[in-house]
Amino acid sequence: MARRRKVEVFSLSFLDVICCGFGAVILFYTIISAQSGIERTRKAEDLSAQVSKLEEEVLTGAKNLVVLKNTLQRTESETVSATSRATQLIDELQRKREESFIYDADTLAKRERIEKLKADVKALEANARRLEASAQVQSPRGELTGSGKSRASRRYITGLTLKGRRILVLFDRSASMLDEDLVNIIRLRNSPAPAQLAAEKWRRATDIGNWIISEIPESSQYQVYGFNTSANPLLEGTAGEWIAGSDAARRDKVQDALGQISPAGGTSLINALATIRSMRVPPDQVILITDGLPTQGASAPALRRFVDAGDRARLFDEAIRGLNRNIPVDVILLPMKGDVPAPHRFWGLARMTKGAFVMPSPDWP
Image 1 (cartoon, rainbow, N blue to C red):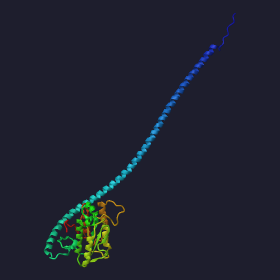
Image 2 (image 1 turned 180 degrees about the vertical axis):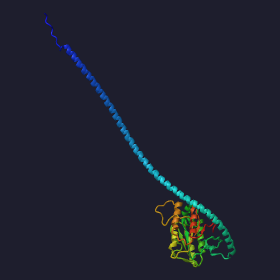
Image 3 (image 1 turned 120 degrees about the horizontal axis):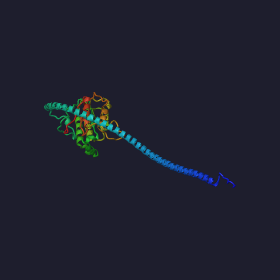
Image 4 (image 1 turned 120 degrees about the vertical axis):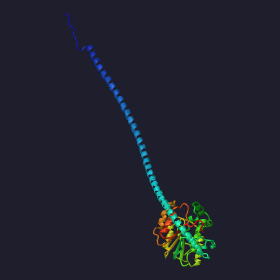
């Protein structure tokens, strides 16, 4: 009987199968692992791209923030500038309103003055007829005025009576007395002294001053001060003193001194009216010969600047503040072109002190 062949479980074929199976498993896991690595690499690249994008967005945001900060600073600067400009415009508007109120008041005063002048004209016509009827053959001393005091036909300033016992004459000798027009004033201000003394408006003013001085009664006392930025007596050495009306020699000296001064400088009304308080014995009548509102206060400003209508009105109010209203102030005004508020202001001063306000006709004397 033949011997039965021995069967081995772990034969070569079985081991091959087992090895192939394990190889397949290892290959499978190797493939899976490789795919996982590729996926992680791809995700890492995506994340890196997102990080780069975010970094770029952060940089862009930082740049935009700087731009916004600069824009905010400019906006704040423009806001401050606009606020300042708005304040200036508000102040300018307020000033224009004040000037408008002044002009409105001046217009109303002009209407009242026209009505008053109509009544005055009728009264003056009656006075003129009465004076013509009672005129004396001998000419009064008031006709002996002007250069050389030659006799000439005079039309007197009506409405102004020299009746005080102590008469103070304040004569404006500022540069504006050269002419009625500002351009001509500037031209004459830079001209030689003879041209200034020959200016038409200045000759009118000095003739009026000479007429006033010559008409002061002999029983009265008087003093004449010339003023621009300061006030000084025409006759040197007589500050604070009174001159007797009966002293003909000193009267001639005062008139000669008036003919030798020339207009210059600004106008300080407050310094002119201060002479009233400087007199040892106060006057009982003041005659103010001027042409407009003041341009300066008691002292010159630290910085030179344009003086507008509002400033001049304020300087006028400052000058008359504290003025003794019991002393009549008679105003003779030779107005300038463009100085619209001046007649109303000086008319108010004369009315406040119960004085006279006179604007001589252009052809006087």
